[in-house]
Length: 135
Image 1 (cartoon, rainbow, N blue to C red):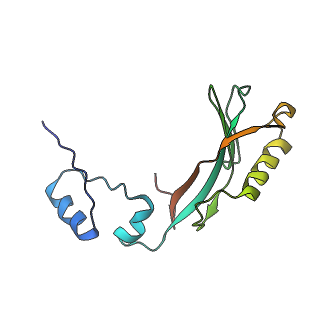
Image 2 (image 1 turned 135 degrees about the vertical axis):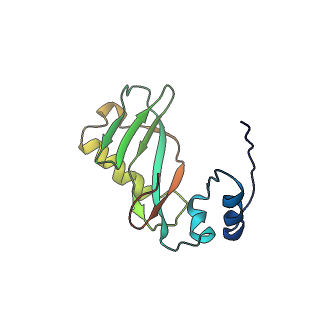
Image 3 (image 1 turned 30 degrees about the horizontal axis):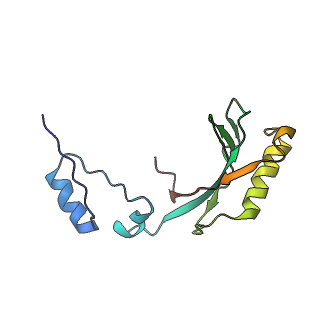
């Protein structure tokens, strides 16, 4: 049994041709599926995280599926936004204040972490078609 991997920019019509020619076609278009398929119901869900120098947390924390702490050896990821149909790509300082406040109020962050050194804030857009999330 042999296989091959083909990387290509595709449009909707080419993807239909490929699906008849190959056993498996994986569409990794993400939010671009809105235009590829086309499917105007595909919308972004904006998420924002902060990378901070906080080596002391030893366990991850998740509050309500939206607020979280993910520690690793050198930095800790803090997050907590879920904004549907929000197309902004830049970090919002008000969002950071909101999720930091929520983490402090729920004792997910200790007093030791009051003066966190921010290492940067990667941002993400997730896909959310109406009717449910895609894996």
